[in-house]
Image (cartoon, rainbow, N blue to C red):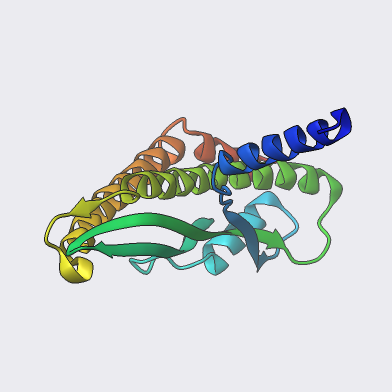
Length: 201
């Protein structure tokens, strides 16, 4: 074998080994923003419009902004000689942030105050988005490799998976509630954003 052919052969072998040991393609959440219209020429008027037009949450109350998500999975359940294993679980996650947006032009001083308010509000909602991503990553980690002996139809594996899903979902919701209580309570970041908007700061 010539030196040139040996180099080509070595390069081909290296490429093959590299491909074999590459990790599975990582998934990424799709994050999108929707807005609802508000109007007013002062911070107080804009905030009043938020109260009248903000998105309605589960208990029928209106809120300033919120974060929702759609999560689907591609799961590979494999039956192996009467046993079952969840060989892989790949998520598709779409996170939607709903935020207020002024309808029409607002005066310059108010526009500056509004921008600080809107930027802070978006930052708050992105924290909720990160909590959701953390939950999905935890689900992915705990799902892959779940197995059970004597499990035709994978019913035992599916039941175990469901127990993990409930626990991790409950943890994410509790984490989000605790964050909101801190941010919206006395001296919290969102409360301060609202006060600054109302006072034109």
